[in-house]
Image 1 (tube, rainbow, N blue to C red):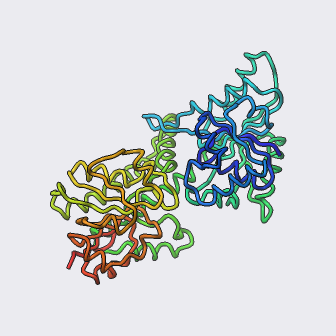
Image 2 (cartoon, rainbow, N blue to C red):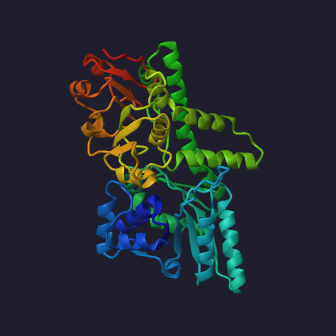
Image 3 (cartoon, one colour):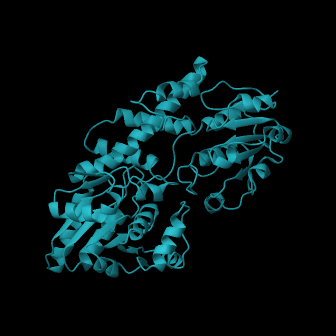
Length: 445
């Protein structure tokens, strides 16, 4: 089948490449000329495991193409995916200007029937707005072509997006049009062979499903962080609590690891957007408000622990930082807890020596060259000359350090672990102080 994808971010690029990989003819459209030129040259603008080979291979086979020509994109296919960004406005609502701009473009250039498939994460009611924009554009041209707007939300995890797209847990199709449903079933047939993963529902329910899924996962994280903070004050160990409740199949082990809060491009934005949507219909989302409030507070916990250890005297201290990305296997620093820690340490007069396997260039892009930030080429380089170590991203490379070497290297022999990577007895056995989340602290010996 021929497919057009507007937008080459995480969602559009991964979805387009995966569709091409099963044999569809995919044309990706983006307004960014430099990005399109780079993609044509085989340069992938994001770090996503497995994506480079997928894009390059399918380009060479002629199944995946890139263009800045919107008219060409609309003409290419009856199936048009919207996978453009929906950044948050100041009030927390999702900014739909890019989605609606593509809708206007489709209306301007369509020359026959089209199925517009909304892959972007958008508030409930967006399909109606897209339909209205296309209808108005066709009316302005004085033409009539049949079209349908379908909601088909993505459920990709950064760092595992290719696998999630190739082997989806579910494929949500929001439409009341049997013809559109049939086309989407044909499109997704290669991903639906083992058992039927397609769930068909009305458009508004599909739009809400995406937000509800991310809000539920964010709720689990904030709940566990709340329990971790309570465990510390009660002398309990949150790791034991996690194992105790995770063994209940109604709860499970996923998303109940305590830490320094969630970040990235989805959870913070989507929780805010759902709160805004609720308030627009005069409903006060008490639980979602609490989820966001707990997460906001949790992102400052690691700095508070470091600051308390030094008695509020951080000026002149050098902090080693392991991890900059909001999660492993990505270079994405949007809403990353590392940013809260960095900025708080700098405000307190501390210097930071940071290492991340893939997010160093992103940190440099965000913060530029600074006297109080040194980006180094490895975990051990980060601790050289540092007073203590802070860990904010659970990369594999950080999971088995040489604790004896850390004890010799860190001036104050302290580790502040925001991801509970280690059994507290291990660093303690080497004379290191160890502070984690929701577990008893061990002072340095």
